[in-house]
Image (cartoon, rainbow, N blue to C red; front, top):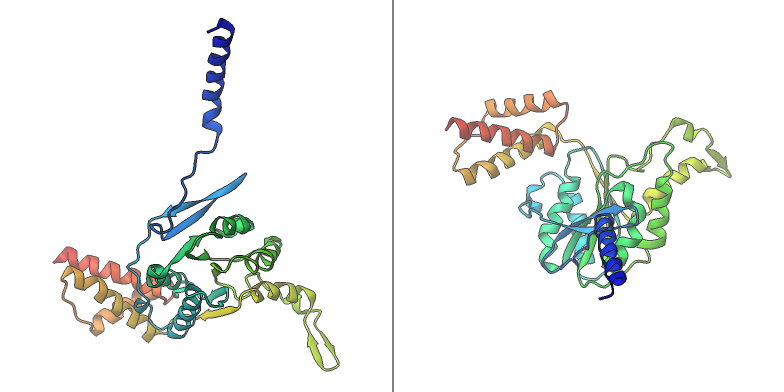
Length: 294
């Protein structure tokens, strides 16, 4: 080999060795017959779907006291999985009341029928067209899941989501649907000043443009499901359910008595809320302590 050509190849090898760490790694194509869930990972020049290992132990029967919400979203998801028309869904309301758990439980129920779950963060919603493009030719049915969706005052990103819902998901292949959870019904904080410019025209009340703009975002979701704080009886029934679910596999015998109920109530009072998350945490703490003492 010519000396100059050899020198050229050696220099080229050194340059490639320095450039290779700067290049994005090759992404494996996901086998959706084996992968049940993935998370969208944003990158400056695009993004990719990262497969997730999911736990399907959570059942719809574990979600107590939200029967109406569970039945409505289950029916909507069944329609979607079976190729029938279905709606994007917004699950809004008090924290810890089962919104995210309901979506995960639906994956456990419908995964054998082809349902798959894609997690996407609020800050990456502008990437939705890229995500949809990667899913378009798959035979599975995909729920794009955005947990804790909300926008602060002054942020303009919610207008991006409105255009995405109308401009991409509504025209997306029929194997893609969006489920979102939020603590706010309209996703954007509402100010008293927004209501200062309401008008009455010919006996009809017309909201200001600020109110219309904020309500229009949640209007993009065809199915609204509301979740409310637990009553004390509801909270205690959930505590009892989770203690039983955790104690039985461990062979722990226990009694649901007044002392245990008061202990659960004190636990909730110390945290300032009564919800499913609080009930589950108390059950884990109580069962764990009893197992240590056994």
